[in-house]
Amino acid sequence: MIGLVFVSHSRLIADGLCQLADQMASGAVKMASAGGLLDEERYTLGTDTLRIVDAIERVWSEDGVLLLVDMGSAVLSAEMALELLPDEKRSRCTISNAPLVEGAIVAALHAGMGGTLAEVNAAAEEALHARKVDRMVGGVKRET
Amino acid sequence: MAQEITLGQLRNWLILYADRIIAEEEQLTRLDTAIGDADHGVNMRRGMEKVRERLLDPENHYADVGTLFRSVAMTLISAVGGAAGPLYGTFFLRAATSPNSGSRVDLSQFTRMLRFGLDGLQQRGKAYVDDKTMVDAIQPAVEAMEAALASQQSWAVALAAAKQAARLGMEHTIEIRANKGRASYLGDRSIGHQDPGATSAYLLFETAVAALSTSAPLKVNGQEPAAASPRSVPTQAGKQKNTD
Image 1 (cartoon, each protein chain N blue to C red):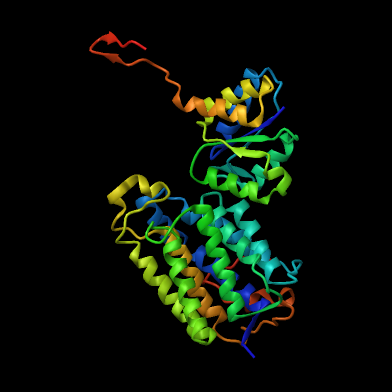
Image 2: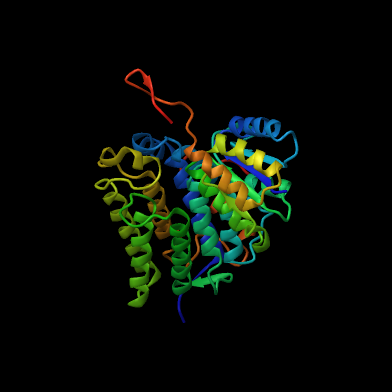
């Protein structure tokens, strides 16, 4: 089963996602958070490449690891983290284009069902297109 | 024989750079407040304080230039926090992998290190000249070094040319719109502001002139940089922390 890593500038967001996604997957999927930056023993906003590497190691299996990231330096730090991994591990890690929150939930569900790295990522990236509300046009609910 | 600079001089350069960044924190924050998320100053200061601490620690010995640069890179990628962490981290990490770097480097090797760093930086950030990023200062500086090398100039001439090119590149970022990072969301409103990343990158070359132009080290025994006194390193007034 693949592992999941959540990367956010905010420690609270990444940790909260672990809690949320873990509940969705009924505790069946290995997941780790790498959120925020430790500055003089207190957390501040930011991303830390070495903590991402550590998170990957914690959930690592031969099936691979999917990384879900927020934006900006989270992407750069995740890419850098992959560069620091040995080749055989790097080739089994994917940084997803999925939106962080929706993607994490979908990924946890699909990982729990035994999806491969590519399958779980494809499902998570689909979440980019998920519609949440149907807009009212002229007071009439639109079809579809 | 080509003039070489020592590991000790390179170490001094990096300490001097850290001092400059720490001293310029407010200025970098001011620039990043205008077009970014106001974190470049604090992020770079935090990273460079760690670099400084590590380089001044007498316990740390650096066998060669690659080890020295790798140490700086690893410190930056874990301590900076913003995009500058992986970007500067990649710059130093790739520079560290440049061939022929031992405990001394000649101008050709040093220039190639900077070229490796620049190429890595561009791979990581996918930024080109005129995107209003660090690349706008670093690329012209590296090209100036390469041109100076090709015409067999001295270290002093090459570094002065690099500094000048980096300064012009940095100043040019005022006139252009940002295509990368948070500033790119501002579109044309990013015009008229100097890029904070190009500014911190320019300081790399400004301090290189001071630290590397002479083949005579600044009172530091280049063979044994770790044994050198931290106090011989010039610092910005009042910013030096007592780390020993």
